[in-house]
Structure formats: C-alpha cells, structure tokens
Amino acid sequence: MKKRLALFVLLALLTLLAACANTTPPTPRSTQADNKEFPPLPVLDPAQIALGETVYAQNCAACHGENLEGEADWKRQNEDGSFRAPPHTAEGHTWHHSDQQLLEAIELGGARYEDVNVGGTSNMPSFAEILTDEEITAVLAYIKNQWPEDIRASQWQVTVQTANQ
Ligand code: HEC
Image (cartoon, rainbow, N blue to C red; front, side, top):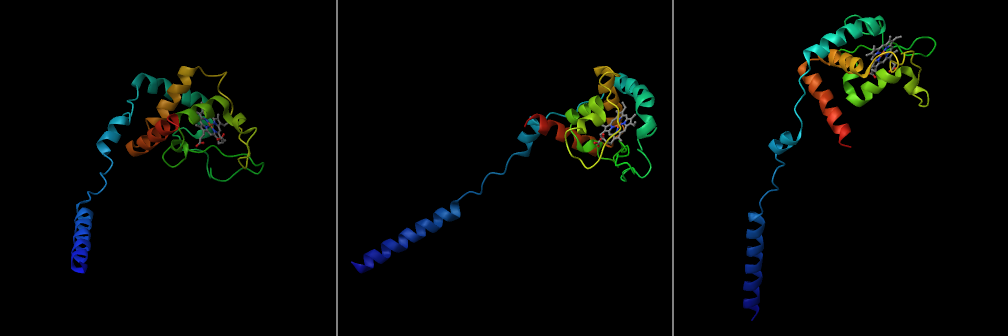
C-alpha cells in the first residue's frame, strides 16, 4: 500500500514537472501590430513651410533667432526673472512638447503662465489676435521641418500619446 502511494506521488510529481517544462513563454507583444496602430509621421506641406518661413521671420526671429538658435545664454533667466527665448532647434525643448502645447504656447505666449508657478515670467506675446490659425500651423510646420528625423519622430510620438490620453 505504501509503495503504491509512493509511486502515485512520484507520478504526480513527474506530471507536474512535465507540465512546467511545457509552459510556453508569454507571447511577446507584437511590435508590428503596435506600429500598425501608430499613425505614420505626417508629411509636411511645402506650401505651409514656405508660409511659415515668412511668418517666422516677421514675428518670431527677433527673439528666437533668425536660425531658430534662441537668445544668447538662453538657459539663464534675465535679472527681472523673465525667461530668455529658447532655441527651436534640436538643442532646445520645443520638440519635447506636443502639437497641442506648442499651438497653445504660440496662441497665448507668456500669458499661459499667469496662473501657474513655473519659476519665472515670459514676455512672449500672444499671437492669437495677430496671426491666423493657418499662419500659426504654418510657423510650426516651418520649425518642425528643421528638426532631424529622429527628433521629429519623437515629437510626433508625444503628440499622438497625449492626444490618446
Ligand atoms: C518678445 C520675444 C518673443 C517673440 C517675438 C516670440 N517668442 Fe516664443 N518665446 C519667448 C520666450 C521668452 C519664451 C520662453 C518662455 C515661454 O515659454 O513663454 C518663448 C517660448 C516659446 C515656445 C515654447 C517653447 C518651449 O520649449 O516651451 C514656443 C513654441 C514659441 N515661443 C514659439 C514662438 C513663435 C512661433 C513665435 C512667432 C510667431 C514666437 N515664439 C515669438 C519669446 C518670444
């Protein structure tokens, strides 16, 4: 009787072991499926870029620099606590923000910081009444067009992710 029990336990253990060995690893998340869901990087419209170039030269270059380079020593705040205009190149942080945030920055300028403490003030004007929606989108397209591909892709990812939240 004892022998039978021992045999039974042994068999049970063996079955268990076999079952463990057979366990298939969790299926990896298919990256292909992810890519399918992720909308491709939009192609920038050359006409929009051209319009954006004019808009930029007339409204933004004075502070952000003719070549998007920003103000000298832009990371340092002015004595009065106001921020200096950052570059819009890969060196700056414009590309860290979603389209939504960038459009808001251009539309509202420094006024968007009125009710939030960001550690300083901004003298950037509000362009909501100065530029049309078309011009605002165009100037953003002009800026994006100067980003290297990987920076553009990164900013696009931020835009898609924040839109899906
Ligand atoms: C009088 C100077 C001035 C002008 C003109 C100006 N800006 Fe700015 N801009 C600033 C300053 C200063 C900041 C940094 C503080 C802030 O975020 O408001 C800034 C910030 C920004 C930001 C946010 C960048 C970031 O990384 O958070 C964007 C986008 C921007 N400007 C776009 C523009 C565009 C486009 C124009 C022209 C249509 C323009 N600015 C004109 C001074 C200016």
